[in-house]
Every structure is written in C-alpha cells, then in structure tokens.
Image (cartoon, rainbow, N blue to C red; front, side, top):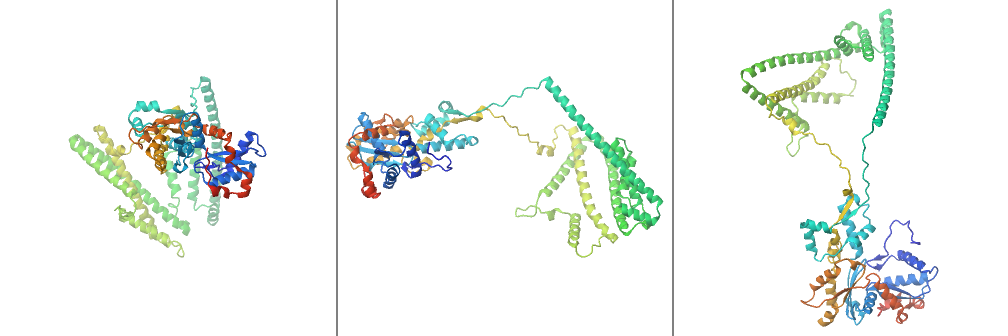
Length: 638
C-alpha cells in the first residue's frame, strides 16, 4: 500500500470483531482506496459504507467524522452487508422476501431474519468467531506439530492452506474415528506441504591424483615438523651443555676455594652442599644423553634419583647450617618411609610367588574345592570394593538414613583429620616453630602412613580381584564379571542425515478440526453458540407464530467468504434440523458469490432513488455533530 508506514513494528487490524476501532489504520486503507479511484485531494461523491449488524453508534460517528473532516465527502450513508447480499440474491430469485441470512465473515458470524424484505435486527444473533480464528487455529496446530518449522508456518501461509485444503466434516466425531482407526482412508484425506529442501552433496571417493597430492602435502608437513623438532632438540642440547659447563666451573671454584669462601659461593649460587651440585651435574648429563638419544643404565638412574631426592642424607652434620639440618631430618624421614614401602612391596611379591605355588598345589590335589574357594574370594572382594565405592559417593547424614563422612572414617583417618585441622588452626598464631623438635616430623609420618596404607590396600584388593577374575574366566566360560556387566559402554549417538520427509508437513486432521470452531467455538475458548445453534436462537427471538418461522426456514441464504468451505451447506442443514420440529421443511441456498454479493447489492442500492433520502450530509454533521448518531440510533430500510 502506497500510504502505509512499513516501518511500524506493531501493525494491528483496524477491525475488532468486525467493528472499526483503530481509525488511524482505517485511514491508511481509505487513502489507498481513494488513490486507486483517482481521488487525490478531496472526494466529491457520496459514500456508502457497509457495516455489521447493530454497529455501535460511536464507531459510526468516528467513521463519519473521518470521512467528513479528512476527505470532505458531501454525504454519507450506512448499510448492513448481510442485507445487501440478501437483497441482491432476492433479485436473482435465490431467496424470498421472508427468510434468514447466515453470514460467515472474517471476524464474526451473524444470523439475520428478514420479514417482507426488511431485516429484523432485534432478532439477529452474533458469534465472535470467523475466518481469522480458523486461520490462527490452523497456524497454532501446525506450529505445535512441527516446532522446528515454525518460522515457515506464517499467518499468510496458514490462510492459504486453509483456503486450499480445509473442509467441513459432515459428522465431526465420525471423521475423528476415521483418522483414528482407518489408516488407508485417513491417508487419502491427508494433504502434504513440501518445504524447500536441498539434498546434501554426495561425497565421491578421491581420485588417485588427489590421494597422491594429499600424501605429498602430508609428507611435506611432517618434514617441517621433524626439522622443527630437530632444531628445538639442538637448542635444548646447547642450553643443557651450557648449564653443565656452568656447574662444572662452580665445582672447580669450590675445589680451589677454602671452607668459608666455599660456603659463601654455595649460598650465592643457591645450593646447600657440594653433593647437591654433583647431583645436578649427573642430572644434566643424563638429560643431555636422553636428548641425544643415548641410553642410561638402571643403576645410574637409581643413583641419580636417590642423590636428587635426598642430597643431604650423606652430608656430615658438622658441615651443615641449622636450616640444612632441619631439611636433612625431613629427607631422612622420607627416605626411610620410601625404603620401607619398597621392602613391603618386595616382601609382598615374595609372598605372592609363594601363594601362587601353594595354590597350584591345591588346584592339582582338589580342583573343585580350589575353584569354590576362588568364587568365595571373588564375592568377598567384590563386596568390599563396592562398599568402598559407596562410601565415597555417600554424603553427610540426612533424613533418609545415609551414612555420613564421620561414620565412614576409621580411627587412623580420624587422627589424620585431627592433625590437619590442628595444623591449620595453629597457623599464624605467633612465631612458626614447627620442625624445631624431632617429634614434629612424626606428624608427616602419621599423615602419610594412613594414606599410603589406604592406597596400598585399595591397589592390592583391585589387583587381587583382577587376578581371581582372570583365573575364573580361564576355567569357566559361563563366568561373567559383574563389574563389566553392570557398566556397559553406551553406543555413540548417531546423527541421522535429514531427508525430504523431514521437510514435509502433513495436514490431516487439521483440515476439518480448524473449521469446526464455527460450530463449536469452545474449541478455541470462546463460550458462545455455533452458527447452527444461532439459527434456533434467532427464531426464538422472533415474536411470530410457528408458521412464520417455518416460512423463514424455507429460504436460508448462506453468504460470506468463510462459507466457501466444502461441506458447509450439508453440515448446516443437519445441525439446524436438530433444533427444528420433526419433518419440518428446510432449505439452504448458497449465495451466488458469497464474497462480492454484498458489494453488488450496495452498488445497486447506491444507484437507486432511495439512496439520496437516507444519507447524512456535511451540513447535518456540522450542525449536530456526533450527537446526530447517538440521538436517533438510525436503522436504514432497503
């Protein structure tokens, strides 16, 4: 539209249930209409406006004000669109003077009785359901059914689908049963809307030339990486050799210097003793050999490792400072603990070898008893490991009776937690004197012993369970490890490629469910009567005898754009018969052109002599203003 402001973000219809409320938007529509008719400045012709039944007087007053003040029209008349359509079809011989007009419009539906050719507005009936509600209901159903295609299901597309595919079911419940039970017939009544879809490209196998090109490219990239690694390795070797030469020079200076001077040289270099420098030299030599790809002996590795970890153990106490003595005590304690663990592992290995020998003897003597003992041992270890895992997972005590952390800890673990808490609480309270006494270092021993024992016990139980499991699997093919069976590896999620079926929208039950709101407005939350029940309500409002009502039912005109759904006339007839006496005569006729008959009837009325006697002029408006419409509540006869 030429005069429409397309920059607005909240466009509203000027109509609300077929009554004009937004006159700002109505002005855009009139600007467009008058411009297409050639009226650019003022409209110098009388105007005939159609409206719905019982249009509010304030809406008619605002429309007259818009036409008089904005466009300067000389006179205005108002008429009912249903009446114009009925009178036009009456001239065509489709209906008589007495009858009913059922108008199914865009926003509302009306039923208007006619007696002697004139509308009886006191007996008309109205329902605020129309074609727009059907379109919106269809859009909502399809959007819920295909949420990933909601952007494609626009209001305009839903309007198009409604006009092309929707129909009125003769019996709504029977039609539902067809889609529920009869798949073949339901498939015939289903329509499909194919959205744009481009098939994914098919990956063709690469040619030999492409494979050769990629292999050459990969080889070049690998060569660049190898050259870069060689350069980095040479740089690292040079750096290590320089550091080694610096350490050797430092040892030469210590050998030539006297004892006081040697102590200051060590302090300036950041070393505690000559042994520590020798350990660093051996470590540098080992690093250089490793960078060059040369092998080192196991004994040398062990010696270097021991010298690197505990450099002060072999240094006499007379040559050490108080800080170095303190460090030496800690190293002696750690070395003793490590050696004890190694001896325990060695002893355990010897015991394991002895046990293997004894088990082999028992297996030879009595195989059945031996495997029964293995199964019992397997059950005990499995239960023990599972209980340990459950203890790690459980939280603190709660109302459900779960075991808390305090109940899971044994005595050694509780002592360790107490020592940690005490050390953290005492930290920062004055001078830190921890380590001045020998018994202070027992804290580390107690704390590490608990952890080491727990770790060793866990490792031993798990290795023992694995050993027993392997032995049972060797002799019993039906044996199943419950730890492996309880935790199967999940299959990786496979992404299915999209096909044309994923972009096809099926419109089946929605074809008749959406237009059903005309007969059951409660489906969309409107608590009003359907169009078939409206006929009964309108007849009850007529203060006439039954013969007049029977005569009206023999000439029922169905008009309006929403009445174009297939199956509308048979469904209306069956619905109206439910409210009429048994074997009462009934005749429904569809208008010649349900959309344009109202315009053709209005054009015929505007060309007649009655039109001039039923108009409001500009002088009347200027003299009376809006009170002219409120005072008389005018109803025009045709």
